[in-house]
Image (cartoon, helix red, strand yellow):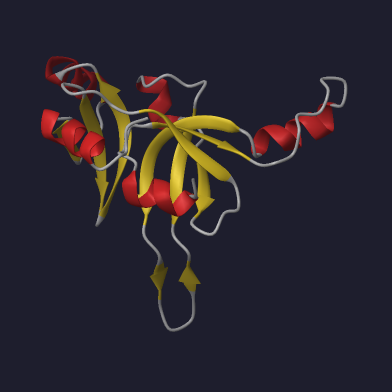
Amino acid sequence: MSVMTIYECAPIGAMISFRNSVPRPSDEDAEALAAWKKCNGAGWLVRCTPPRSSIIWSTAGAITLLPGEFQMDLDAAIAAREAFPLDSDLSFEVVHRPVAGEVRVLQEYGAHSILLYLAANMADARRWVEESGHINIRLEEVCVEEICADAVEGRVA
């Protein structure tokens, strides 16, 4: 599916895979393999940034992924993230969606928020917030209605 479909339909906290149509190079060609890995991988969807514009500039908007090798823990909050513009020509797929009862720990940045942690439950989320020291935090529980809406609308991973 397209990056725009991910932007419009995938829930924050979903594991998203991305790929191009180039076959994986051999391990011996380290430079080609590194370039291939930049366009083929997976990550946690932590932010969807809408398109913006002013009189002098505009941005296409983007989705931001936390690389899949990072676990959602204290280190993940400061780990490198990768943004994919909404006009990206890569193919994307939802690999895993958050399940009912999990809690998104989101940090507010003005009109935008970013996922810092996906907790197993509310107690885990509160413990994480207390230990992390982050401010401007919003806790958002993944509810059964969200999961059912995804299934009814055909968005099941």
